[in-house]
Image (tube, rainbow, N blue to C red; front, side, top):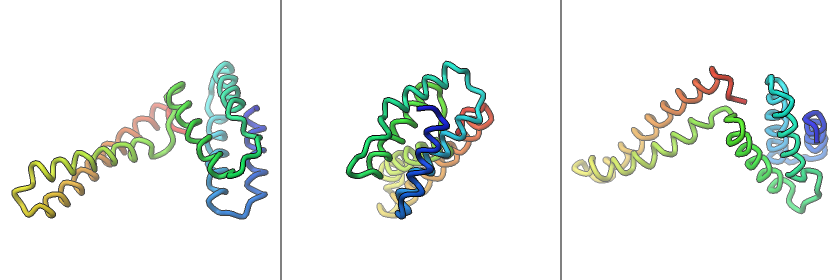
Length: 150
């Protein structure tokens, strides 16, 4: 499936449905494929991406289309990340924010426990999330500057 065919396919699926959540999935697919077209990728990379789109068997009629295409888009993002180091907007912010929550919780329990426990945990969670999100935003900015963001 070529990139243009994929865009046309998802736009037709978007026109068929009335469900807002399903439309978001199709719009996300269209946005990713459109940004791939705008990048100056070598022909071999484009063929590799088109082969991967074929492997997802997108034109199959599944019972729960939203769930099927949501899984396909997550697999496609993973493929783009692994093969070409391409990430979507906010990828690192989300990743580092989650890690910040985990380490903030540990910090709040271990270090800030001499405060009242709930205050220590709360401060640790908030601090970890803020620091993680800031680090993630920095990493997202680096990816955007280097042209690795979709």
